[in-house]
Image (cartoon, rainbow, N blue to C red; front, side):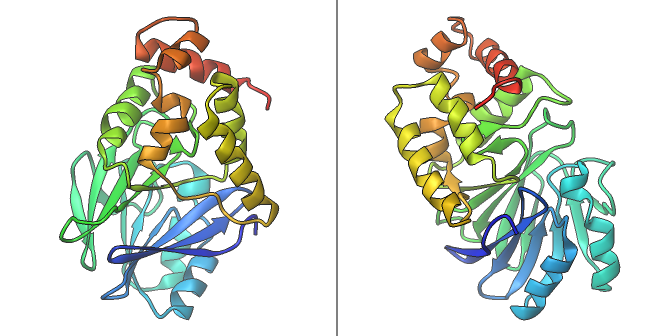
Length: 271
């Protein structure tokens, strides 16, 4: 495993971080009262089932962020191995075993937890982020961002435009409470933060996070989660309104132009 297994306790829920493949993350979302659980992007279903059984959870739902094989590639196998009914959520017909197609603002529950779907097309046209809160809506909550928002970065624009990524990061995800925990799809923090430092060399918050992340990775601990507020302080793709970031990207004051230029530069950036 590329990282240790970790649990994060939030109001009304427990998030189990499950490393997969070379640098992917799967997540088990557990309602602490009912022990009902959902899994995000279960590309390695054996580890998911082992954890569910060890913790005596009731697995009922699969939340797929997008159709790429390293996120959706375990869905069919999980359904075969699990042998009980599972609702498989996602926003793209290319997702294996999909039986609950969702779009912007659709809602459902995991036990007593409330789930809201955010449509964030760009990395893929059907990408969905899932915002989870305790039923009464208080508490920080968590958002599972797949390959849209990474710690310190964003996904490549394989099927979308700078306008779409701007809408995803700077309109939809930015509107979540600053304390919302961000659980992204990959352990890319050090690579992303290296680019963030390149864009804003004088941003001390970035340097501090790099030191923290180096320490975490030295002991193979995951660097997730961050928070929405933290991402606004260090992620260049969420800082496209900032003069320092715009200056680095050529001086245009249009944040969408800045977004496009940053992504183009990042595509070939060597840390």
